[in-house]
Image (cartoon, rainbow, N blue to C red; front, side, top):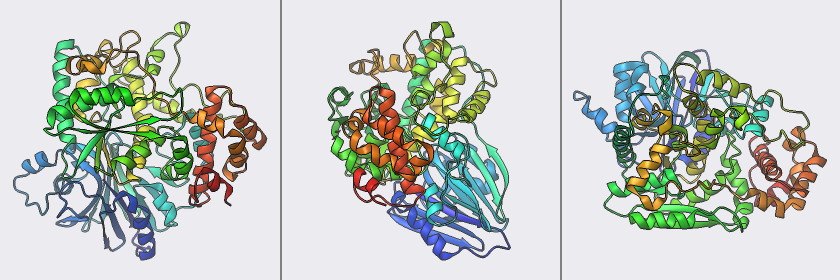
Length: 587
């Protein structure tokens, strides 16, 4: 895992400014504290901050081969197999990122079709004067581009483009609506005018400061559900999961995993324990707030059952107030998912022992786990409900203007998800994999992990697992009120101690309770922030913080608090200056 950035300027532009390049690379230092590298070739600059995971000795970047140079963020898990498939190539390193460079020399922009992993890659070809930018099909690793004076800029994080002065600090109103109503933003356009996401699976060919061509790999099959019985599906699933976890454990540094006690992480720890001779190191977070869901006891029981070493941390209210400005500052492409809180603290703890962590993101989307899928399949008279139909502030009237366009991006994604032969369930899953997964869950994982220079790996988001699971018949995904049916059956067979058919206990973070206890103090501070004053009525904000009566009130307060801290850092450009109260009090 690393941080990359660069400039692709037109032939008439001034050569890359060393001061700008320095700001770009410094802004991404947290992503790769193990080394830096750069190459400036005419009006193209490639920058790299390294977090060394594979080939600790000779894997520094940029990597060079013939007329091409590469910088990459991520891991190519099938690098050994790719090397074996190119017997005539002389490799200069043992890096997992060198095979993609030689594939590009052979196949051009189609090279990414051979990669199995998570990645954001930039390849410069000096003779043709092109730069190829690629992002993995699931969108596990981030990559952003911006049209700037003289050409194009790219970076692993938008904040690097802002810190370098390449893009002005401002918000796009339509994206603010999305963020408040959905917790994340959809599509290619970010909340920052002028900064776009390279979409999951995209490969862009750029030259002379412009994008010349786009092509995209879609990891989600469009075909209808296949005809397969449960026994055959179970055998295929076991092989696919085993292979994926084995690949995701390839590392030259220590690794562990995040264990919630739920289905997905229980499957991972079962497979990791099967594949490792030494005990797996597992990390779990819990909360000190009475009445909050605490997964530590269940996680500890699962860890004992597989002989894992279990480390549990307690996230206290005082810790949250102390570090929340730093946590929010890490979320430059904002997601208001309150799971950023335990994720950030887990990554901080894990970094003491490991540099790589396997996590369960993607399990619900691929195997059909969310309750909203079951509701989306029911007729209205049985409680059916369209996904993402209700916004967070629909029944919390504190905003200056009623959001009206916030669902436009989601509606466009719904149309695309329903194309082809997908069943309604598979279309609902595809919808989540278009935006919710890459622009909320994976974004959260990337930023919280990289804030502490920890690499997060997601074995469920693998082409082999997708091929084995996504086109399963609907009744092998959902039966009655139970989602992830086949995955639960696999876990029942391989680790019955996980109690896979026990009623699901939803994961929550007690942000409402924490805010309620400090509402009288927090309300005026949040209401006084310039970002909040632009979108909400200050008196109504203060009243909301004083009178939290329902869950939705507490969640709306959390979103306003997040936005106040986020706007202060990424639009006003002001760094955190202490805890929440100190930061919000400082002008």
